[in-house]
Length: 173
Image (cartoon, rainbow, N blue to C red; front, side):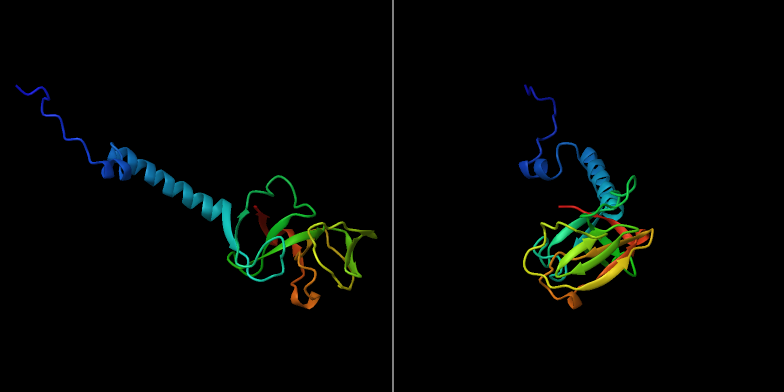
């Protein structure tokens, strides 16, 4: 007499690993994971690839980072933050460090950033710098954003007097 009353066969180990013991539950989990990933990586964390050497040594060329678009919902960007600045579209952004805040006067003299007459300490800048730049007064909604690689000639950098509306978010990592 058979003691197993027509029990379904045990699934193979491969099926257990790939699908699980309950395929409907696994499908629901996959759908939820895809939906959450879509929301997070399209609206909250934008991937950004570093192209060029203007952020060396802090960020290497061809590195991938994420931009947190929610970072500045409740406060404004701060000096020293590395941000993504939108140029013409959402997918074309520059990654730069904020050194000048709205209303400040910024000048580069003998390679040093001077904000309202005081030298800005910049421990992230490595190597010699010989930048000279005339004083610039930032507007009430403008931030001055530059790269960390100051040993590179100033002509090779994009300087941004970026309005707050163009700052997409704060770069993570």
